[in-house]
Amino acid sequence: MKNQLHALALIAMSATCALTAFAQPTWNVGETILNEYDLVSGVNIPWELTWGPDDMLWCTTREGDVLRIDPASGVYETVLSLNVNDSGVEPGLLGMALHPNFESEPLVYLAYTAQNFANGNHERLSVFYWDGTSLGNEQILHIVGAAGIHNGSRLLVLPDNTLLMSTGDMGDGGVSSQNDNSDNGKILRFNLDGSVPADNPDPSSYVYTKGHRNSQGLCVGPNGVIYSSEHGQYNSDEFNILEAGRNYGWPNVEGACDGICDWCNAGAEESFCETNNVPEPLKTWSPCAAVNDLIYYDHPAIPEWQGSVLMAVLGGFSSPVGGRLEVLHMSEDGLTLEGSEMFFTEFNQRMRDVAVNPYTGAIYLALNGPSYTGNGPNLIKEFRPAATDGVTEWKDERGLDIYPNPAVDQVQFRVSEAWVGQAYQVMDLQGRVWAQGQLQSGQTMDVSSWPAATYLLHAQSNGAHMTRVLNVQ
Ligand SMILES: [Ca+2]
View (spheres, protein in one colour):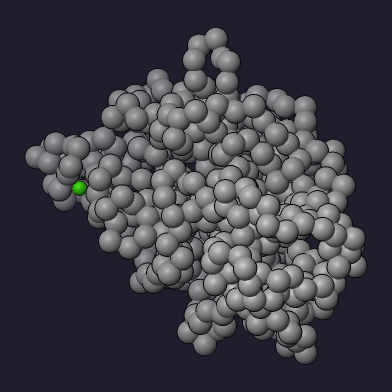
């Protein structure tokens, strides 16, 4: 399947490209040019971003919504609004994974912290049925502990059709992480029906690996290698290869087994590693960079990134570099890290997640604003390789473009047929309305009297939303 898609993309790249007439910000990755687009704006804390088997981009927001986004236009519909407990700084609706045979089994897995439990906070792993319009028929597969911080929750379907879920230590200092009777501070592995896989390390337990603090990044690389990222305490964020049954050391080990600890007992770290066969991370970050979700990039459209793990980085409190995309170049067998690079540091935005368009090789980044815990403006950006921008093999219907952007005095709209006549509003980040009307292609808007600021355009049509960012200078 993947190779077919790559072949498709190569055909597309060699075809004559209808380059967009409207200048976009561009980025250089070696010799590859990426065109930057704002795909979705104005949604609060996009957390998981994943390419669906239905060729749509699926997104969770921490406040409890599941969005299904048309990756061509950015038009999205809210297909589920959950009543979540997002009262702390980190809980809410978090991880999501789609059933690999989505066409015949249209199921969506979600991890979220729920309200109104008799026993206090809990985190659910639930599966929902997609009826083509919305998600419903919740079935709770498993429950673990939840708290205001450290809820893990990244979900990943493996090539053997089992499901991984990371769980956090709930800020308990790692007590749960080494407790074999707790499912917190672990990576859990499920069959897709919620049962325990017979080949789990302990066939009576969901636990796949233990000794985790708060892992929020999972992906699969070549030969089924599983990568994870892990938030450290003050230092020693980690990038690991997950191996069944292994102990990753928290809270007795931080980062490498080198006797350097903030939280753990430095004098005992190396002996704990030896006794418990703790794997060494492939890379660590000190002070913490707040390393988040991962995806393995193997598309020819950005050859400089082929065979790399792309990691969304939030940017830690004392990290010398803020939010970014980190590109971790892996050896061909996926087992060795050969080098790393940083991109998009200029945005100064917390980057939560990354997804890939299998046709064009474009990447999508969920940006959570400049400050913890993710106050806006929140954006989903697309970085589309110029060579695959506008190709006919892939939908190139943008829906709406505003140009020039940034603007000084006048802007013009380009509107696709389906959106002509639909109502729109342009608001500033405080929610004040600066313009409204019906979308018309070619219409102009005078912004010469508007204060220099970022504005959000929002249009709505039968439950579908389209958003754009307009920067006035
Ligand atoms: Ca250490």
